[in-house]
Length: 143
Image (cartoon, rainbow, N blue to C red; front, top):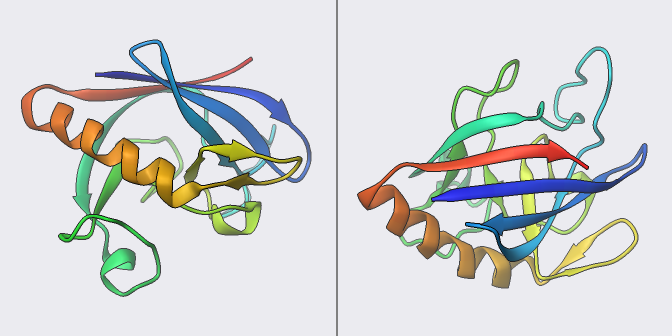
């Protein structure tokens, strides 16, 4: 499965994009700002590139720090992101919820996304199904 995250609306507070699966629109995304220069931990979007995505247990979800509809507390993890660790796709609505990760939502506003849990609930089975039979990848690009 190939996912593409197209970042198209950026400012100093946040980055909004669209997530496509095999070229079909899936949902909106929200990330920290794209920064040129030094990374600010938990406040900087990941670099553009192509990353393998796998479903793994999230310790934060187990502790209740992240929401997941998965009873095994799994969330998508982006592997081998240069300069970053633990980058996940998860629910959340504002830049304060990102901590460097990719948030998903069905609606968007000026600086936030909405219906995030609905978007994650729809997305997880697709990633899990792909992870079970083939590799799952995400390409992140700046439009």
